[in-house]
Length: 177
View 1 (cartoon, rainbow, N blue to C red):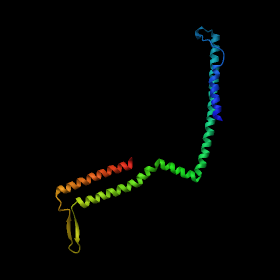
View 2 (view 1 turned 120 degrees about the vertical axis):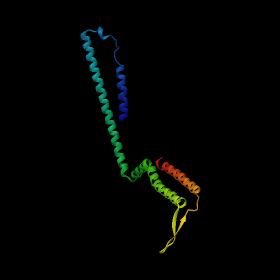
View 3 (view 1 turned 90 degrees about the vertical axis):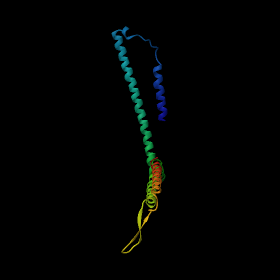
């Protein structure tokens, strides 16, 4: 209803100035002082009248927006208080931050597990270490990975570094993109 009223007001506001007497244009320098004062006063009155119309129209538009937003707020509040509204708000929140939460909840444990597996594999295959074979007062120790040549150990280290770099690249893409 208000939209129709505003549309009619716009049509009237733009068509009224077109109706009226025929106008003749005369340079202001050819007018007498009395005529010039009368023209200036008429221009001022017309300007004030035009501004008054626009102010009134602005007030009506403001009232229309106020009424519409009040109705939207009331219905939004009613919806938010219902069980369906809570579910819809959850869906909206999931749509906004859900993928980030899933990436974080899955990505961080996967990152920790993957790096742990790579470090465990590196320790088992690349580092020379000794293990206790027999306990007691004189324990016996055995060296592990001591029989490998330096070239074999270096190539295994390179493979582990490449695998770790690729894993970190994949996980950073998973977590941040």
